[in-house]
Image (cartoon, rainbow, N blue to C red; front, side):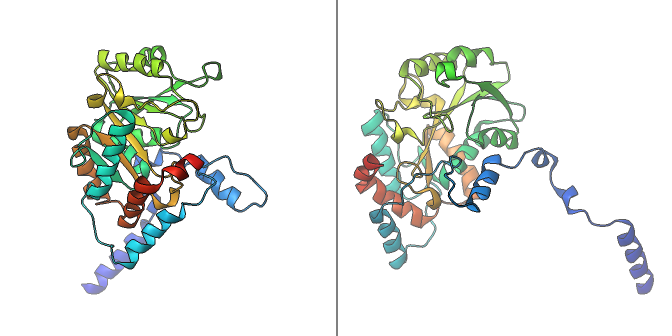
Length: 308
């Protein structure tokens, strides 16, 4: 009996050779690999080449931030944090938005610390998108937006921007692409890769469209500190937009902390709670060492931000 089972199993194995690729989900197969990462890896192997690919400052993380990370390790700060992140860090983030943008966020329930802004974006899409929902994505755009929308079960609707308008998307362009299935709009300014900076009047016009069509905005403002002409306008600071937006931000660009992977999202309690629910299962919390660096960055890093 045992021999016959072994023979049958051997025969079955010979007929059904394992093909691991068939186990990959079809919707994942349809997502192309990141072209910019291929370019990044290629440039790493070349000498004398200046890469204009990955958005990374030409500065090393300031020493006082690195020192704070080192000290936190030396004193044994290596445990899990709250799913939301260290409260001290969230309080500092909340204070920044109150001071710089005039928007109040409760640090206990409306601020979520994430593993980079990319995770924050992924969480935002997964928190608001139902299968079949459409999300308007102005192009050119950061490489992860459209794949993240697709992986969340939504359909990205690309809206091209043009040099004649300095690559700024307009309310009219957005309105033309709204259907009954539209759920959200993605904004990114200053834009990666074009560098386009949205004017306040343009944002106010978009806000009117958002209200009229009952939409939510996911606004990636990680380059906000790099606005050189005039002050950055946070989308949630516009009338009626605090409850209709999720603001994504982080420390990678402003404080040259790209490899520390520290980002955050601010928004109304129901939206942040939904994102945190996903975050606690997928990631649990952002690395505590990076969070300690973020605390130091917000306490004592303004001069380095201005220098960069």
